[in-house]
Image (cartoon, rainbow, N blue to C red; front, side, top):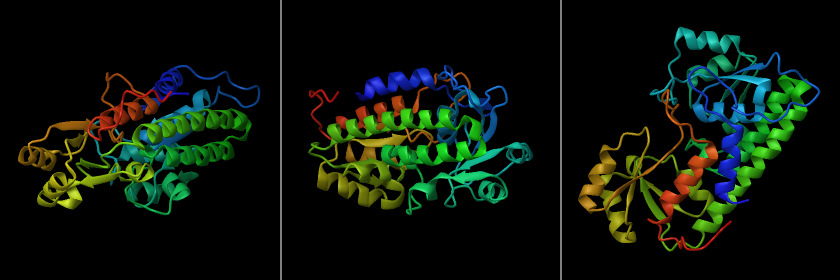
Length: 293
C-alpha cells in the first residue's frame, strides 16, 4: 500500500483528540465480546499518544488528551483539573523517560504505560512517533496495555494493532524508497525532534538549537544544504537567522507534538508523515519522478 493510500485509510478510522475526550470518527465494527457501552477511560499525556490510543481503542476507549492547545507537552506542569483527570483514568499513557516528570510521578501510582522505555533504550530525542518503526512498536506495547486493562475487548485491540502496524510499515517503506537514493543526506531543523527519523533512514538532522548558528552555517556551506526547516510549535528565531545569513529558503516540518487548536482541520498521523516526507524530498534532491506505490 502506498503512503497516500495509507493516509486516506487512516483518515477514515481516526479523528483528532482535543483537550478533552476524543474518539475515532468511524470505528471498526466492534467484536461480540467486550463492551463499548462502558468504554475504558484512558488519559494520554500528549497529543500523539492520544491519537494512538484512539486509533487502537475505537469506541472501546474514551481518550482524554491531557494537554490543551498551545501548550508544550514536554515538562508539563499539572493543573488541579489535569490531576483530577489522571486520578479518574483507568489507564494512563505517558511517554516516560523524563519527558513529563510531574505526569510520570502520578502515573507511577496508577495503571499506566510509558511508551518510550517500552520501545527504546535511547531517551532522547523524545519524538519516537516520527520514526514509523518505533511508533509501530509503540502500538504493540499500547495494545497489550489496553488488553490488560480491558480483557473483554482484547480481540478488538489486537485487530486494531495489526491495522496500525500495517499502515506504519507502509509509511516506513515509502520513506525508505523515497529517501534512500537522495544525493543530499543532511537537513537543518530548529531542534533535534527529527533525529530519530533521520537516523532510521540514514539522514542527518542538523539541529540549530544544539549545533549553534555559526556552526550550522558551516554545515550548510560544506554540504550545500539548499533549505532549512522551521518546525510547527517550535521557536524559529535561530532558524530564520541561519536562513538569512545563508540566503536559503525556510520550509516547514511538523513534529506532531502540539494539540491542534479547536476548529483546526484534523490530519491523521499518516497524512502528516506524508506531508513531512514530501517537504524533505526537494531539499534532499530526491528523484520525485519515480512512483513508489
